[in-house]
Length: 109
Image 1: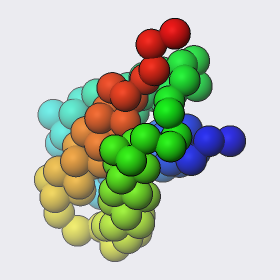
Image 2: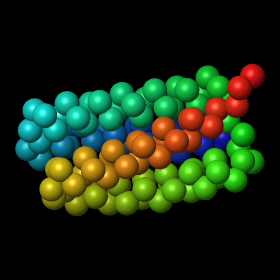
Image 3: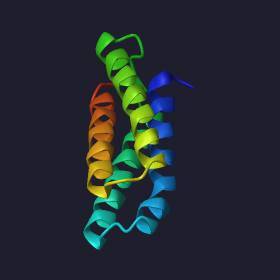
């Protein structure tokens, strides 16, 4: 699997699996909807990467994948040590934004 697709897949599955955790942590209805929207964006990024070609040698793609992997580690730690749901949602949004930047680099066929 290509590094970009793998990073986007990891993000999508992490976010999807964290929904119940954040609900149990007391996320408000608005926060749950925001998380669901970010999960949908993450899923779309993942499927875009699967269904299209990314230039894995492009320095910008490599940099974005590296950033996403770093954010992923931070996000894992943030979710594992639940605290402020709003801060978790901010971290999720930042990570999904990086994923969106990756798929914006899809090579036109």
